[in-house]
Image 1 (cartoon, rainbow, N blue to C red):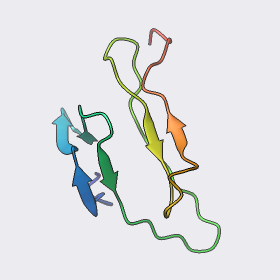
Image 2: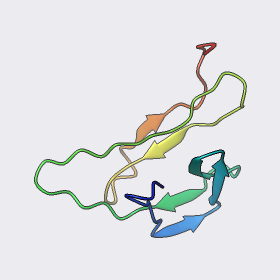
Image 3: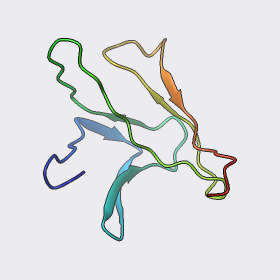
Length: 84
């Protein structure tokens, strides 16, 4: 959600915007919550997903997919065993 390139959700169900210091996020505490963004790719594009991982915050997993391919998601784990 940078000022130069703000991320605007197309639809949100169970997600809400949240800020900490100079960083802005979308967060959810609801299992199965869904947030949708419009993604435009020219040719072979790359979609970058930035997310928080932690050993102590009790974060869940995030499933992401393009188009209607929910049957084949990329899973991002919120738990991280790294102490940093």
